[in-house]
Image 1: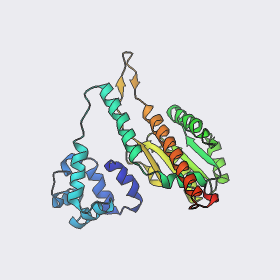
Image 2: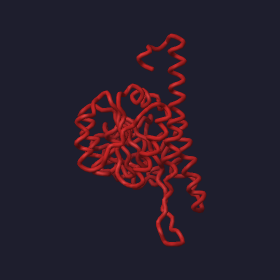
Image 3: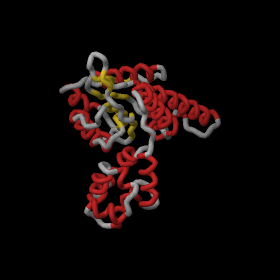
Image 4: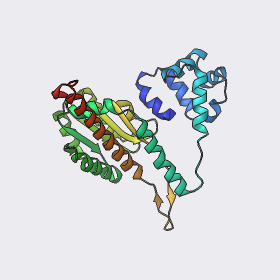
Length: 263
């Protein structure tokens, strides 16, 4: 798990001091991995104990453990060409999704009465279509929420017993952020799919899935190309993990350990 993903998971609990530490650390990750805690505190204009609390907020025992995490993250091998970079991107999402515990997400998804998916733009539209297509095989009809004003008109019809998926590459799309705020007030379980960076949308959602940042490559016709296949790998692995989740629930029911209403 990257440092950005850890921050997104805990950002809602950050104090002003935590935000100050992260603001500096996010821009000087490699340098902070070799700094003493007092030096980091000076750079962030906070106390020694504030830096320690920030590390503990992210789940580390102390600043030394955070520094080791930063050092390992900054020493990731950089691919030498476009093919290596894209293949490394695919491998990262495979590893991340295989290791991720999705059961809490599936619990909310499985018991929801209706499922909705939000997103604006060509890439987001393709992601939404694939999500709808693949989960239909598990018997789930996911409603594709229209963009524009119609999106806001639909939100009052969505309740806390539903489930919403919000797709935003940047996680900063203002319409998606506003939709998440309105849905959150209504107590609707929310899941975001964004790039792996600190972003507002992830802070508002209960469950967050991430795609690592990728580079743009210039084609012979001078177009800018960015691979989007990672999103489809993510959805595919998520679906396979969901099938496994359903099988495990059926086995628990057969063994008499689970109420039929939870299937």
